[in-house]
Length: 156
Image (cartoon, rainbow, N blue to C red; front, side, top):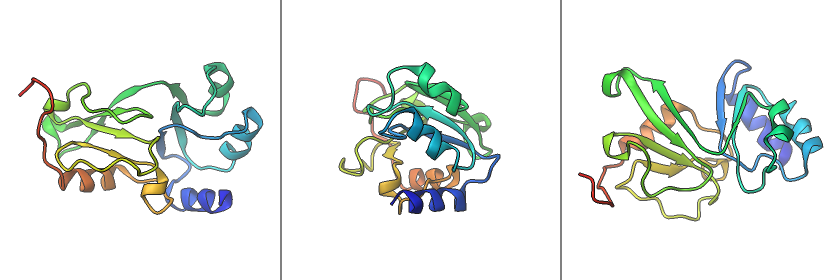
């Protein structure tokens, strides 16, 4: 299984690609983290999951950034003012910063067990939901284009 995941990753991710891994990178401690990280292409930013070390210092040497939660803006000519705002978290969120203004929310953790909400700009990007391969920003955009938005809280 591990070798297939590594092969799938490296077929899609080039050495200079920026990757946001949404947690649960490795179960067996720092030796395991280093072992797997050394085999993977890309500049990997880790958004920690519940199975990742609680100590950022144990993770920091292996990644280009380590976070508990992260908001990014991706240059995109199709997005409002040329930027797509994305919230990255290991866990699924029902609402998130700027969710009422076209922001996306991407998560892992649930391994495809949560029903996808077609009215939310949010979905599970875990590899077990996507043929055991990481997905590109372009693929995220394609999936989001199939969704609508209906607010679940008081904002309109």
